[in-house]
View 1 (cartoon, rainbow, N blue to C red):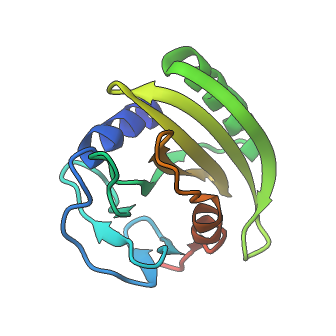
View 2 (view 1 turned 180 degrees about the vertical axis):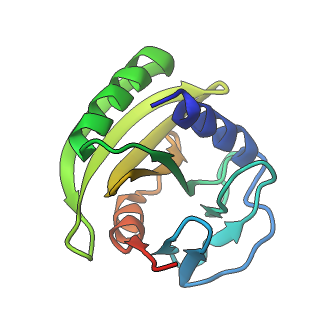
Length: 172
């Protein structure tokens, strides 16, 4: 992995600090150019942020930060495990105060295996809890990252899991 994943994580964090912006509530969000879709948590909005390849899904802000779900993809022909290991190592070295809380296998509704990583770190002076789901798309790997403030007392783990569990590759 190039540092693209980390740069996008930082960019999305900074951009969502401003709030959830305008967008529309939908039940399933389709990204035709990326060939995937996933469901949105109830009441969350799909938001387009200039400069990002795909739209993000944003919740209600707390303390000026909107919890969010975003997807990045990267060409990688190796196995999912070969992709995940160096990405975690890069996060450990590059993200301020990175603390891996858990790593486990995760199943999508399609039956496909993913890897779920839960960690905390500090970005732009904000302590975040981020859950990243690594999904094998063949020669493309998807990383779906769900972020919230550590100080946000809402437990969003079920919403994050449900949204990501619904992830599916769409026929283009």
